[in-house]
Image (cartoon, rainbow, N blue to C red; front, side, top):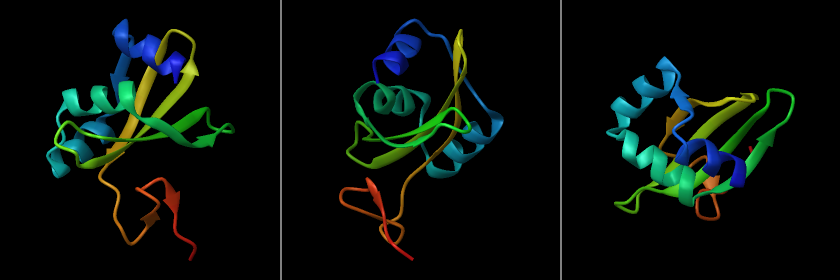
Amino acid sequence: MKVIERFITTERYEYYTHAITEAKKDGVEPSDIVFVLLTGKIIERYPERQRVLVCGEMMNRVPLHVICDYSDEDMIYITTVYIPSREEWSHNFQRRRRR
């Protein structure tokens, strides 16, 4: 999380169009995404794609998942954001339910 924090606090991050679209659908503001990236927890790692899934709560206490791509050493990319569903996630939205 220290690497993510460093990118965020030095404003070296960008949003994929998909992330912006999904955020708008769920009423998520850029400040919510930044807050989750600074206060959340990495709950999944996708090393083959150089991505992580961060789980946290927005300032209004609603859970939010943010996927970040760290394949560029100079920038972190926010690929998507979404409000997790109770049907798919358990343990405070930090563990996928078995199918």
